[in-house]
Figure 1 (spheres, rainbow, N blue to C red):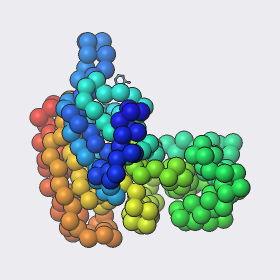
Figure 2 (cartoon, rainbow, N blue to C red):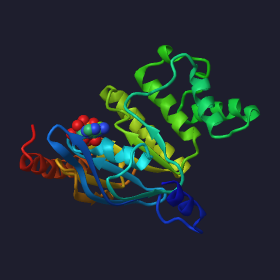
Figure 3 (cartoon, rainbow, N blue to C red):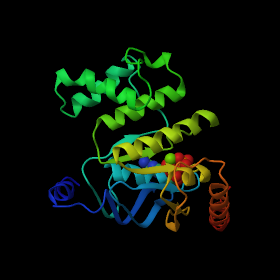
Figure 4 (cartoon, rainbow, N blue to C red):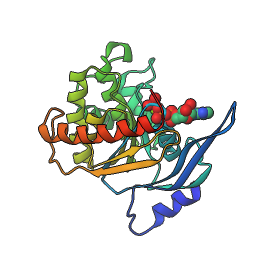
Length: 261
Ligand SMILES: Nc1ncnc2c1ncn2[C@@H]1O[C@H](COP(=O)(O)OP(=O)(O)OP(=O)(O)O)[C@@H](O)[C@H]1O
Ligand SMILES: [Mg+2]
């Protein structure tokens, strides 16, 4: 991936944030090789917000990990515009560091000079609306606040692509709703490209410009929808509900077809 990465960065203009071309992935299982992802082709344009939607176990995290470069495809090719930043369901913050120091660590790893780190960390905390929480330790923060810090830390990496794996799944509905608004705002403000994984149809429609539905066993691109509903959207808006129903029907068909649940 290093060489393709360098190629993407040196290109005069990069027309994609991520390019997933004919990617398949198998894992060794008790019954031999298990095909988890089968011939996935997806592009994410610069500044685009794409959600990957699918039933539990269909291979969403596997695909995101491949895009992150944490694992290699069995076949096919993935290129990204620079190194992506990652955010998971679990905040993965260092509990012995304060919110601010967690962000500063990411800045340090990104080569930001020591003298600039504090100021930049404060700015990022402000961006996720946590001004004044610099000195708070992780255990002093609510679940929603932790995910805000995790988002600020991911943004500290200055990546052009943000990979998010069900980052709000563990939050209550109201906190999740607020964070949807925040993420939409931050996405617009920063121009970052987002590839967001979820099994929640409404969340996918609430956030995305494009929803890509993966089938199960093996994961394939089943269908894709362009979401033209203007932002800001609310999860309870009629057009969001309508499209969610349509997608849920297709998802149900996929699940039935593959004998799951
Ligand atoms: N390292 C691994 N070794 C073997 N099998 C794996 C490995 N990682 C994932 N799998 C298998 O690949 C399939 C897809 O898993 P994955 O975690 O990508 O699904 P998912 O869509 O993210 O599910 P969920 O919505 O529950 O998070 C599962 O059957 C899982 O057991
Ligand atoms: Mg997963």
